[in-house]
Length: 575
Ligand code: PEP
Ligand code: MG
Image (cartoon, rainbow, N blue to C red; front, side):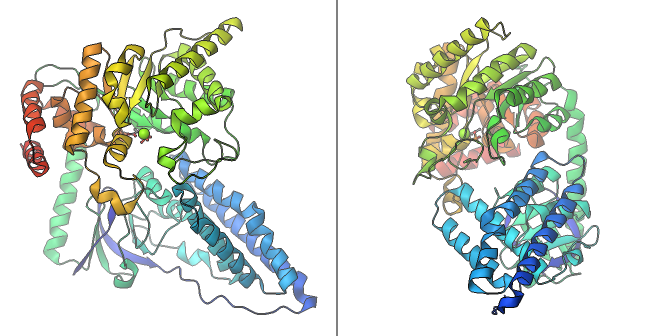
C-alpha cells in the first residue's frame, strides 16, 4: 500500500481500478525531404490538422447535455488554435523553406511559441501555453499515427491516472463514465480542474509521480476532498473508505432535505444565503441548492474565449435570462472584473502585459479607463433592471472618487435611456465590493454613497497578506483567520451597520463551512457562495445561536496568538 498526496480539486471518494493513460510522445523524427516530395509532406501535415479538427468536433458532440458551457468553450478555443497561422501555416512555410519533415517543423514552431509564452509573467497567457502544447501534441500524434481511439476506450468506472489531461480529455472521461482522475501535474485553477468540479468528477491534481507508481488494473482509492491517492489499499482501509463514502452520501441526502427550509438561526435571526454564478447556465445549480438569489454574477465570463466583447444586446439578453429564471429573487450583477488573472481576448483589444497585473488596470479601473467597454454594460444592466430585483455591484473599489465616477456615468446612462424612452429601474441599488484593504479601512467613507457592501475575501486576503492568489509558491500563507483579515472584515461589517446598509460576503470564505460560525458571530447576515456548499452552510446557520457566537467572536478578536485563533475556531466547529 502506498499513499500519494496531491491537491484535491473536486470532492468525493472513489474506490476502483486504475487506468494509466500514457501520453508520452516518442522521439520526434527529424529528416530532410527531397524537393519533389515537399508538397506531399505539406499535404500530410494538413491531413493531420484536419484529423485533429475532426477529433475535437467529435468530442464536442459527446459533451453531455447537462455539461457546463465551459466544456464546449475550451474545445472551441482548441479548434480556433488549429486555425491560427502560427500553428497551421508556419510549419508549412518551414517544410517548404527548410525542406524538413512535418513533425520536425511543427515541433520547432511549438518550441518557438513555448519560449514566447515562457517570457510572459501573466497567468492567463501561461494557461494558453498549455492549450497550445495540447493542440500541438494532438497534431503530432496524428502525424505519427498514434491512435487516440485506444485512449478513448477506457473502461467505464475506471480511475484514470495521467501526467496531465486536457479539457477535451476531461469531457471524454465523463462521456466514458470514468469515475475519478488523478494527474501528476496541473493546478487547482487549471481549466481541467474547473471542469472536473463542474462535471462532478472527483479529482486530484499535482500528485507527483502518480504515473510512475500506479499500474493499470491496480486498486485505488481517490479522496478528492483531501487530495489523497491510495494505491493497492489494505482490506481494512478499503472498508474504512466504503464507510466514509456511505456517510458522505447519507449526509448529502440529509442536507438535501434542507433545500426548502429557511436559513434562520436558533435565536430567530434571518440569514440570506445566495449563490455566486459565472454564466447564466449556472442558475440551475443555484436554484437546485435552494439559493435565495444571486449575490455575485461574475459577468467577465461572458467576455472569455471570444475575439470581441459581447455587445449591449447580448449582455442584456444574458442578464435578463438570469433575472427571469429566478423570479422575485435578487440578482447582483457585478460590473466587469477583467484584468489580472482574467485577461481575455474579448475584453480589451491590445491589452498590455504588466509586471504586476493584480495591482494594475483591472476591474473598475479598467472600466473607468475605457468607457467604451463600460457604457454598454451599464445600459444592459439598467435595461435588465425592469425585469426583476436587479442590483449592480462595483468590483475593486479603492477610493471614493471611483464611486463618484461610476455613479456619474450611471446617471448619464440613465438620462440617455430616458431620452430614448427605454425603461429601467431609476432606483437600482448600487453596491461596492470591499476587496482592497483601503476600501475596508475607508468603509465608513464609502457607505453614504452605496446601497450595500459585499466583502470579496479572495482579493481582500491577496492584497492584505501580499500573496498572489494564483501563485502556488505562496499559497501556504493564505489564511482567512489572519487577524488583519478578520479586523478588516469586522471594520466593514461595523461600518455597514452604522450606515444602515446591508453587508454581504461573496469571497470563497463565505462558502467555507469552517468559517460560518465565526462570520455569524461577527455580524454577517448575507453569504454568497458556490452552490455546492450552500446546504452545508445552511445547516450550520440553523444550528447556531447568534447571541452566543457574538460573544465567541469578541473573544477571538482579542486573541493575540494566531495559532490560538485557529484552535478556538476548530473547537467551536467540532461542537
Ligand atoms: C473576491 O475577490 O473575493 C471575489 C468574490 O471576486 P473574484 O473572486 O471574482 O475576484
Ligand atoms: Mg475579487
